[in-house]
Image 1 (cartoon, rainbow, N blue to C red):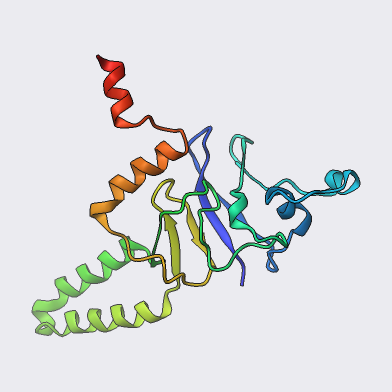
Image 2: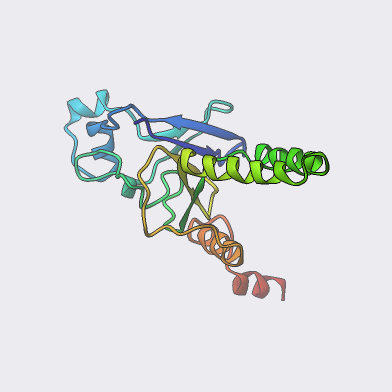
Length: 187
């Protein structure tokens, strides 16, 4: 199974995608990102473990914690590959617009089908639930990790915690100042 991450470039803020090799074992480069010692001859041949933006060419490093000691991607994902954040959640990889369209078609047809179209939409929904794969999403940078096994530590999205986790993750990455510090600057 192929692994991929959809991420947003730090420089141009445009979305991009990085696909990993099917075996996900770039041992020399991943070992380098994980802090392993690499010989000088291997360093020249080692691929950089960076996410390179296809729009502006900006390269940002992948999180070293996303790789094991052998340099392979950890599966299931434990940290965000794009930012290294540990606050992740799981959801189904389903197009929301398509889901709304299915419900609207069922609702529009319900007067002529005596509500049976809504029952059919419910059946389609249950069927898709078991077919559509799960993805892992980062609360901090919204990076989407596809092709990884389900991690039971990652729960479903919680809207009440999402803003707090996003703010804390951005502070950890240095992209945003803590609220107390910004209030002191205003005074």
